[in-house]
Image (cartoon, rainbow, N blue to C red; front, side):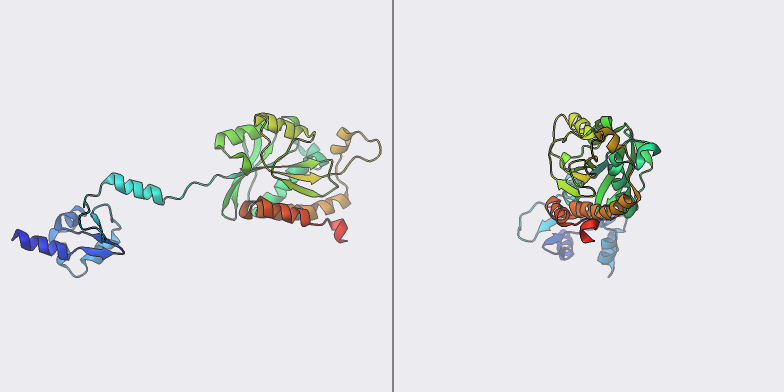
Length: 284
């Protein structure tokens, strides 16, 4: 009688791909079905619908006749952990500038303006306040991103940026700083994988809070040199003219595309795109 029962159980071993699922009356009962339930024509389909494999049924390799038929909860947990995709670090995109309406339209705040243009294009709100910054989260394509506009005033930008990077444990290669550059022609973009501060006080502060580490990408936006003998500090706090705003709008569209390429295809392709773009004046 016991031999006949064993034979019936062997007949009910079902092949799934390259493995055999061994189903017994006791394992069926463990799911809450009657012990004789697997005599019904549709028993196996109903069991599959429970989605309980391999937790309640031992798995045998089709290539091994002596494999153990014990499956533990620990084994199942390991399999689930192995299948779980690795969590993706977000990108942090930071625009540098000074807080308040008084400074918003000035040359020194073009980093803020670029981040706002990018967030608007991607439908991401930067209305939260965290780490002494206006803050927002979202996605560009399938890549998680965070936007930040430090409200510490330019020269202390690192207080905010350093705190965000530390809290979220963001790799520096995924921290993009966007800021104004006197040494580039007006509305010219330059994307670099790393570098110094170039005399920019906001970047000085960020690098200091990164403990001197300069290995993070940056998108520099040209604002040109002051005319004549104008003081540099006065020049960077001057607002843009109407004509300059038109050129900036054109440049912002190029910047938006450059950031998208950076996040989705990599820095090299983005840098190639940036370096091959022409200004509105050149196209005219």
